Length: 237
Image 1 (tube, rainbow, N blue to C red):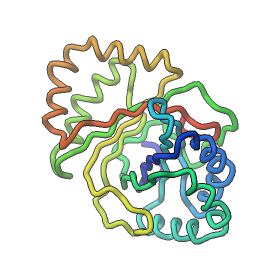
Image 2 (cartoon, one colour; image 1 turned 180 degrees about the vertical axis):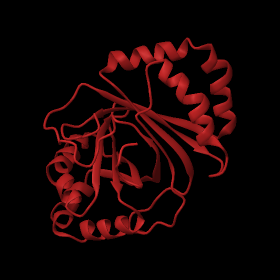
Image 3 (cartoon, helix red, strand yellow; image 1 turned 120 degrees about the vertical axis):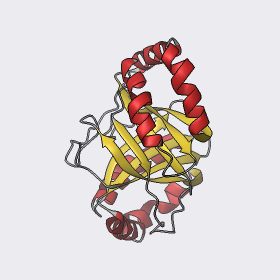
């Protein structure tokens, strides 16, 4: 298993129209190293290909105490203080955030010492967030035994799988959604490869007759599907 982080934030921001590139420029120039200097791992930052006003990013922490220490250091430190007003001016909502822990991190998920690129990639990071009824519902096992094999067979082997970390928010200045989820992500070399996966999934009888109906039954509400484009400095690409 990829040695990374025991605690992960998955954050999705709704932005004012036309402001996403402004936030990404600020983020990639100032907030990547600014956060990593406090002990965080900024694993990936993305444009949502299906919503021009959504910015999605993933950051990791060694453990919960490290999360509290790092967030306090960053949000009360000089980098955020210098750029907070400009960043906040791009946002309508920044509270769509989930506290997660890894179930599986494959070799395609960036390690702590992965190189930080400087150019946009053509790759697509796609996946889904499943909303569960409870933490002890057997969803993780069902995903591993039944969902992941179909995804893999249709060209979308999960690179990263996370589930909710049920714990008190130890940095209440940034709210977290109080729900239980499973989230997975796969990597595709480009849009064409992603489209081929969707074509194969649509043609899969196992998916439509067995797996998908069971997913619907096990879910508390409709899943969220994500189709993301890495920013120029995203490690996860």
